[in-house]
Image (cartoon, rainbow, N blue to C red; front, side, top):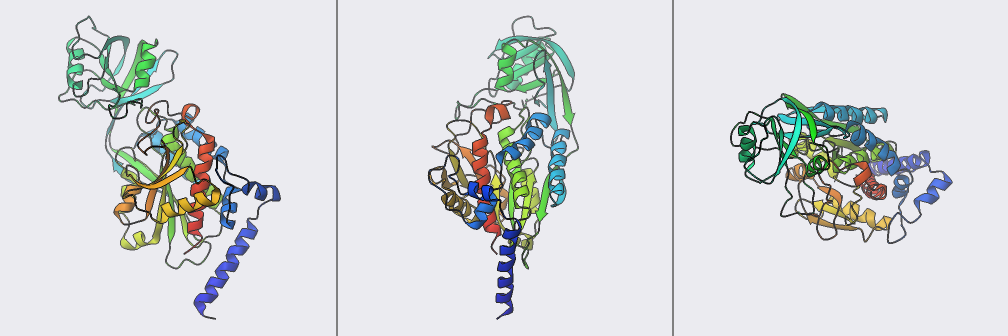
Length: 453
């Protein structure tokens, strides 16, 4: 017998022993073979699938999401809240036995405002870099969708509906009339009118002497519902550092070339949003799969990567990938990127497999195969061409990668109406069933890939 065949035989024995070591209780094993939630067909699970399905639990993942979304809330690139989330994720992965690194990289300045209103939770929004950095309190005067201010607003907070392209005129009109601040409510997109707009950064053509805030539609609704006295503070955050949380568990079987799979998501959110679905859901999926996969036998290493600063241009993932040499690129078999994997929005019934070029690759093929074994044949669609998430960075270096996400049936551009808004919360935008399906699909696909050379 050749040495290569001998090693393969020993690897097979080790794999069998590994499954025996992490063997399932009879009740748990039976549960793994039952029809999956919402599946069209009964499952035909392989041994590796059973090991994943019997253990993965959306309710466990939800515990982490409560910390990230409910307790920490908005996680803006480079700020204390993003750092707090990174420390929480890193600590959990270390406790699981992964080797964890916090990879730093610089990010741009931020101008953010925190707003208090009587009877309301604290709000956050973006502020204009060309406006004043100041603390303000006062009464709101609602002037609507105009670019001029005609009434007496001295010492008041002027509330505008955004006139796109005319934000400078609106801000100057408020300042010239003696207002303390200009509050501009975001306008709905003509392309996607069903989406409620989140906070935005008012970029002005010239400086103004008062703070200028870019409110989400939600903030405007709450103000007009009665929150007419506000206090807020604009802060300029500079010299910022964001972090990727990189965790690795080595292969349990011989892996001479250092092959690895990447299971990833971004953990930051946009200003004003607690980011429950985008992308707290993908983050906790990675954390739960880290727990499930930590002791299962594999012939490849498993890397759990949580990216910082995705919302400002996929910065974290690009920093990581650009730092890989050619040998490092060759080691990665594929990147399974989960971004928005648990929305409760009713029309988002399709689980999309999104590769940058629309072509099939190791990751999309693995998820499609897992869907067939699990019985989710009518819920999964793709691969379809779409970037706009961290899988782009891997594609640019020739690494197999895709983004996986629940979206509308007709096209992956059909996102939930609460996308990027303050209402992207667990209570309003998270489905435990969809999170469970996502966990099973990515868990089974990634594990099946990692089991082989």
